[in-house]
Image (cartoon, rainbow, N blue to C red):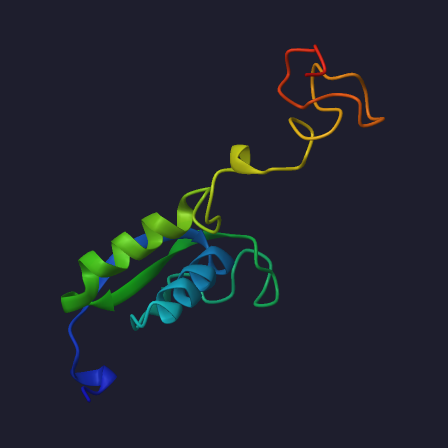
Length: 120
């Protein structure tokens, strides 16, 4: 295993605050990619407990050999649909078809569920 001090670290991305950078480190850690944060403003604008925007920015560093994989992992994590497995439109919540479906004769079971309203 290569020691962290033996790796060549390169800039992957800059952030406005340490919280965003820390979230990205967690994403990369989950993907098996080592990452570290270099804060250019060690105490932040309002002290070390404040996680707001830094006047100097925060740099996310990864090993040079993992740069492309890190960028890909972060781009995937940034997608709004990255955590979903299917389309929301594929939900079968039962409001169409079946007994009393759209166009049928109501919810009393008289409709045939084919949507044409004839009950057959």
